[in-house]
Image (cartoon, rainbow, N blue to C red):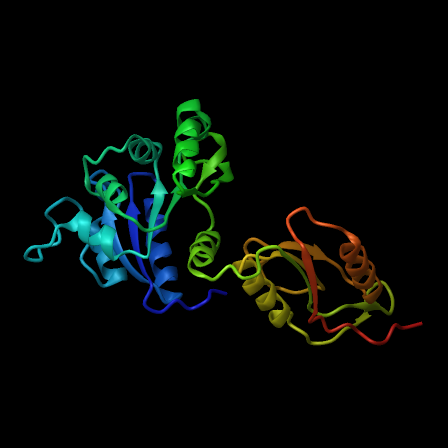
Length: 290
């Protein structure tokens, strides 16, 4: 689920990682969420994916150098920097983060980053050794100190053959991070516990009593609360739904498990929350076979 953000403009800066192809899907999902996406590509990125791919998906001309938009009087890096409500660098290489930290502006993407006043999110994708290198980590700290956000990459098998941290994050997680910056954070300091889905009561080892609840209502509530800044725990009965980004999930089966988990969670304190809200959206089975 994504909150609709009609009229919000994102400048997507694509750099030369092997994960460039995933940025095409990211454009589609951002457009689906209601964002207007304009794309800039570093010269090396165009060697992985042709600009035409992004022009087709975004319905806008892609900027690949300082003279590429073709509009009379338009200066591409200034136009894309000024028009953006958010600048999203995805995928972000170690090179572009180093350039941004050093204030370099020798191609279109680094120039946009130097010129923009909008919030900036970097979505890294690289080899694990490049990610863990002290220089990269120092650059990340520098960017953070300047108010820019660097998402943590995922871990697993990397295309280079290594295993570890450096994978391009899931598209849903990136969209959620974008949404969070564009959504009023009026639930900061609030801990929200949400119950969702059905419960199941066993008749025997094979059969059980349940109901047709999908859990969609509870999952949607948890998702929106997280986007608005809350610390969210979703206590879910059996469903087929993916976990919302930024939400902790506890899975239960029976009504008794649901009760015990909710009670235990409600008694825990949180260092980041001053208030607590419990939203009961689960369809708890009201009969237990004997």
